[in-house]
Length: 402
View (cartoon, rainbow, N blue to C red):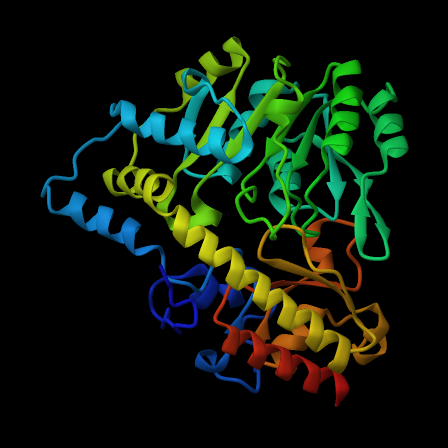
């Protein structure tokens, strides 16, 4: 079936974080700043949801649920819901999920905040790889846990874990690290960690008896020919492993507020269930089930379209922005671009996010928003109609080259 990913959808006045919330979220201290573009003229390429229509089969499921006329208290009693999930992960990744160990969360981000105090003590530390998805650090800060960093190695655009640094930090008694938070595939660099890399990481964590939370929310958004390796298969019996998944990124359901969290340790699982009630929106339940059951064809079409967008971006940067460095991500719809070659274009103390908002009418995030080890980089959300992507790139090139 053909899907119209070129459709431009008006998201104004929908309380969208991407469209209506960017000033407050990115420029908290400069919300009154005057930019040359009016709000309608901006191209938003920052927060990680898509400018594509949610799959029609999912919208149909929501409409059908509304037609039931009553939206009462809801939990998941339907065994087919769990069967659909089990089928998805087994078919696509060879993962045999245990739904008896699964809990629901409104999202991976709130789950991280809730998990940290369940599995770490006040004086223990968390380790993350940087650049990092910011909520990993926030989960530690929120719970008053120290967060330490291990910088990823950038080998000409190909990021790798620094295993010597990881092991040294985990082994150091003064660090008292009890948790490593893994992003697999990685945000913002787009790396799909290999089986060998994950096995090496797992060995270090198991040897030092530390927890691993694996955020695998981007696992469905792979480039053609790539394969996701779940930590669930790398460590089939390790009890200190928690896997976080969700349909939100895959099917553009970020506002649906359903994530699936797999907790192996029985004591931690019991603590979670004692603290947090699994009540859900009936529309969210219907949408999540329909997505995994009926939207696989849509996902394959989406992945091809994203491949095309990234091809366009790579060709554009090569021809129009020769001082920039860009390696196509192996997964996600997020482009991580090195603009250090254009550093002199910035005024003193000016950020790339502010520069492009002011001079190009493009809203994006820059490296310092990703905790550490991202200086001079920007992250662009390319999950938008190709015409918008091309327009944004032309504006950005003009701003830089002028």
